[in-house]
Amino acid sequence: MTALWWVRRDARLADNPALLSAQEDGPAAAVFPWSERVHLWSGRRRAHLARALWSLREDTGGALGIRRGTPADAVLAVARESDARVVWAQAEHSPAGLAEQAAVEAALEADGRELRLIGSPYAVAPGRVAKADGTEYRVYTPFSKAWREHGWRAPAPDAAPEAFRPVESDVDLDQRAAHADAEDPIDPRPEFREARIHDALADFIGGDLDRYKDERDRPDLDTTSRLSIPLAFGQLHPRTILAATGPLRSDAARRFESELAWREFHADVLFRHPSALRESLNPVIPDDAWVTGDDADLAFREWRDGRTGFPLVDAGMRQLAQTGWMHNRVRMVVASFLVKDLHVPWQRGASHFRRALLDYDHAQNQLNWQWVAGTGRDAAPYFRVFNPDGQADRFDPERRYVERWVPEVDTPAYPERMVDHKVEREVALADFQRGKGSG
Ligand SMILES: Cc1cc2nc3c(=O)[nH]c(=O)nc-3n(C[C@H](O)[C@H](O)[C@H](O)COP(=O)(O)OP(=O)(O)OC[C@H]3O[C@@H](n4cnc5c(N)ncnc54)[C@H](O)[C@@H]3O)c2cc1C
Image 1 (cartoon, rainbow, N blue to C red):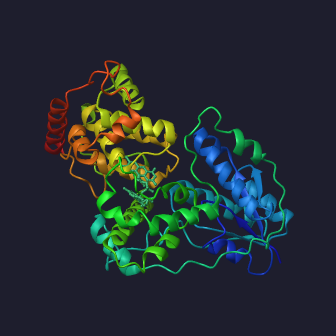
Image 2 (spheres, rainbow, N blue to C red):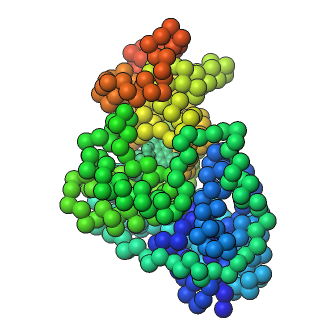
Image 3 (tube, helix red, strand yellow):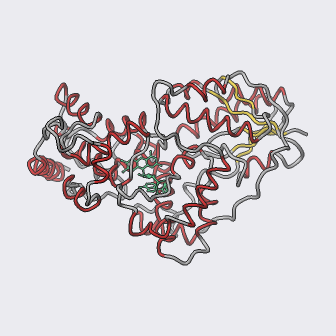
């Protein structure tokens, strides 16, 4: 009997329990629904998705079907064509993912078929790590301790590339993969073949990981793993990474794992508080503190285009525009600058990141923005305001990062500073005091 694998954020053959389950009784059919929702993505992210799917289709001997339509329509149509009574998929826990799987389940059930969910994009599924009384951890550090204590399974064995039944596509992936980002070129293109991603993981673990603990905050050295993109598209599972770092006895390995724990923490927070996608979890700033109208539009544009006159901020925004990725330390600095120096709400910056980042992930983006803004669950105190010059001195001491992205930094062509950081910092702190007073 054929089973169908509904491909979601798990475009991979390695360590994939949903796919293995679908192949249990023989070759599986496989479909990725190319829904309208994908058209809401930025062109660059859609292009990368097309490449990731192109790679997966190659790895399935051309059998993967890419079908236009909602997940409910596409999955039902292919389940009927391939006579699959059972559809296997990876569970999602975000608001959109939950709604999508409920719709697929209802469509299949009405047709006498069944959706079975297994696994998640996390080492420990959101909602599982909880205090003894069943309530959530509100703060990252105890969460991460409990997360480690909970532990995770070993990676699942690789799926068989030949055990697929061909499904027809009605989306011309080759065209999309080749051209979809022609108007928004990214340099360099991130790796998109699954085997190469595993090579990159092995290279990182055998190389830069040693220096991770000391260098992870240095955008000039650029020695972090860059695995956020394959993680966001599900071409790599965090369990696979943790299985590789687990046996290592170094502090660097533990530190690296603790960054993956942030990813799991944010997914857990969003699962428990779906409104965090748009609303501050901890609204510390009075509504009238934000700049509005034309002033806000102008401030936002200068920030977006890397023309603030603050070299580290501008370097980060230009790196983002040109590559679809930005170093984590600089993400924190630019986000703090938008919210606390320009007084623009975090939601607007988060929307820009949604369009610009290749590793965009609802939970990671929105909750990191909330963390920097001081409105999150595990709030960095609102009164922590990043000083863009101090951060540059500390983390880009020879100005190599700034000079790479802002080559005109020392010439008259470089813009004047938009604001006085000292003054705006005081404004932000006064707003916070007011908010505290009224709250
Ligand atoms: C304002 C802001 C927005 C962000 N938006 C996103 C986003 O949309 N998608 C995204 O994946 N990350 C986001 N991050 C987190 C972080 O910046 C990236 O995960 C990291 O820079 C990716 O590079 P890397 O893979 O080389 O990281 P490494 O340092 O090599 O870390 C390994 C992995 O750990 C995880 N990780 C590291 N730092 C964080 C963190 N602070 N929060 C959650 N997970 C983390 C990522 O999965 C990352 O791939 C954001 C951070 C900030 C401050």
